[in-house]
Length: 143
Image (tube, rainbow, N blue to C red; front, side):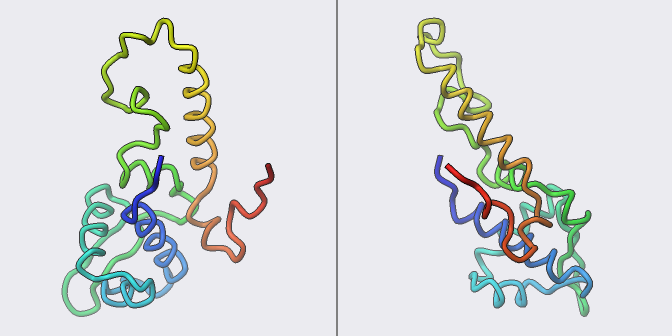
């Protein structure tokens, strides 16, 4: 599993909007400048977030984007599944994957399912609010 720039940038946008939520609608240009992301690329990410109703958009003077819910209502897992389509560590665990002909004999399938569960549980327990706080979530992870 490798998280694309689309997923990473979507998280940055959501955190930026959480940090500035008291300012109302934030123009795309302002988000792009603060996050040092191309406006053109950011448009496609914002479009995806609006379609999923993670953000509201307002056109015209005073327009821009804002979160539709409180920052603690968005999980990293939810955002990444939206942008990445899947967080599965192997192809056979992808949402639309065909059943593998070797699944019954596969010695590693339960391990991959366990890893998939760990990944999803971890990311579903970190919110945008956690990341917007100084020293965000994940800083306490120990191996």
